[in-house]
Length: 316
Image (cartoon, rainbow, N blue to C red; front, side, top):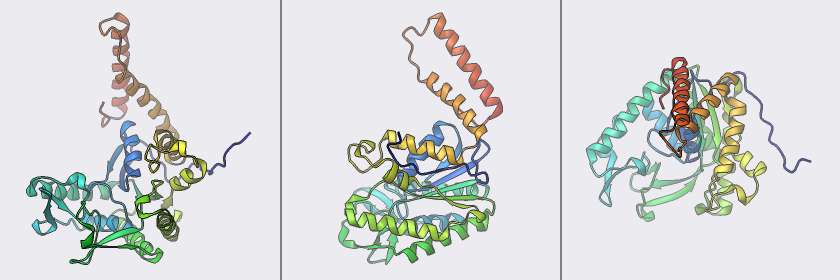
């Protein structure tokens, strides 16, 4: 008996991720969920160099600045509530010292520029079509940093505007790395602060725009994380307590779908070995000095050394 509809996924032979792949993840907070999984399984990945970015315009701005190797200066940051912020970056980068913030941003722009030129895959997660425009500068910001809303105007990006953003992102990335695989996904996180109807409008704009620009023959793909959450997992038991974010079960389920689509068969075997080691490292013995535990630690060390001979970049 089948009790739910299944979104079919199949292995994409032209877009496989293995342990030689170098990945960049950019976008909304769902990027963090997938990024944590990739880190746990020791893939070579870099995520959100300027923190979480929710909308396509902010992502286009980041990619543009990374490719142009923009150097942020004092005019790009401001003091608010005793901390220095940048409208292009998430609050997680904000600092009490202006120089510290500028150094962090510029170092991450420079390192991401180098990573983008050699990356095999970039995964971009779009969160919302709603944006905030700083009225005095007429600039759409990536993050408002809890500044009073009266100095912003709120607007929704149209399908055409988002299509232009994504087309620009694709062209910019391909200009420095023609072989890179680009995968878009729409975050299953609901932005209910915008309103229920407004959230649906927002997601529909993103989905419509993405499907204007994906082109498998040009190695530009789409992964249906939003559709999996909305259709296969259409029950509140798959949400965290806030009833907005997917819970651990949902994240694991979507991750399994992602693996079935993009992770190579050989890498899946390596992931099992890493899982065994990770669980062993987290094991807490009743008697740390017992012969059985010392033998367990020796076996675990041998597994680590064998794996690290094959993949020297892996560190536990």
